[in-house]
Image (cartoon, rainbow, N blue to C red; front, side, top):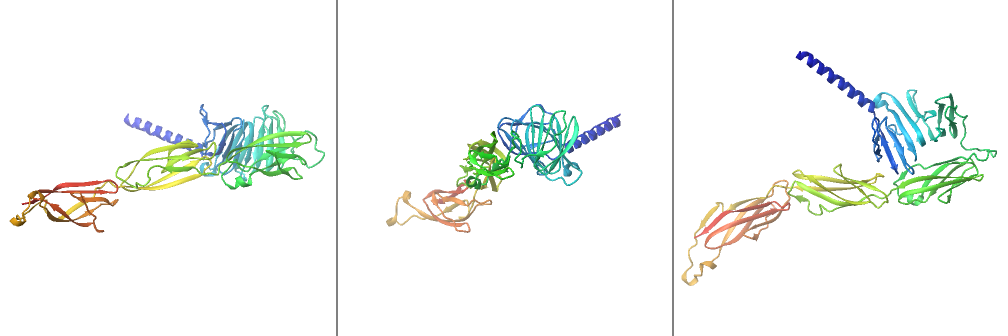
Length: 486
């Protein structure tokens, strides 16, 4: 009976281990939120509660992302591919498998609504799969830069900036190959339209067929050079079109490509890019975050007290970030202790070990700018040790005969000199001696710790009161020694 129960238990543990192993394999290596601005949320696979998207947040297969008005997300794949999810977009990560983690190399996504710009690493093997679905189309990718829109009626527009993709309808069949600078449109239940240039080079281009694409190489900049040079913009419009960004004309080449720079400022930069061609006007908004300034950190403790004698040490200070709308995370020895918006304070009690303690404080803003301060604090809980070598005994009696009558004086005013010798040491971790004295008389020991002092005695009982304090604040006291003068 017991054997049967043990077998059932072993089988259960084996099955549970296999399930956990399968689950860990399915999780795979995650994607990562590289940048976010505005209101964006993530719905983990199998969950019902949305989470706020944060910089550095992992994104697993099965997760869903959505962006609100004026929000954008930059998502970095495990292989380094980059996806930029624009405002009012709903996007699913269906599969995320890597050769290292899963022995497969598959990535598939669903763009339910909105706009997506993606730059995929080149596919070099037939075993690698990159695919984006929409309600009306399936796009097979082989190392491409594409721009993809899904309208409210599920109409999907696929524009290829570089490379090529295969686009087919989910319902009607039919497949087209879309190459660089081409686009196709897939309507629900219809075949993809034949690929056509995204920018016409012929003067016979029909009126109303406006082409307008805007790109910026980054959603955020941390290099201070951008403040002087401006934010770079590039894109595509119809040949002969006039393009402006925040009122600054862009240079448009004969094939309709345009580029230029727009004045930058710290914080959020809202850039309105407009095109005017054949009395057709359109405006798109690009939002770029510029953050070139590192957080500023001021430590209120320690200021000068590098030696302490208590294990619990309170480290406090203030942090300030001059960039508008920025947030700063404060770490002490890699432990997150505070997260502040713009300006705030922090305090953390650290448990010290005896001897040297290295404390590293890092302040990191959401753009990755880092300010680091390193401090060394020494914990010294050991008192100084004082050894009296002369007089050697704890109780010493001195006989001092009275003075001759012609030199006699009141016993209360009689004084006798006593030489006191010894050695003082401050054991490791030594913070060095701060104060040392006998009977209130300050004594300066020699470099080897030995000392010699002359103190005054009077008739009767004289106590030796020895006091020593090290820099850390540890105190030695001894009042046990007596010298009797008879």
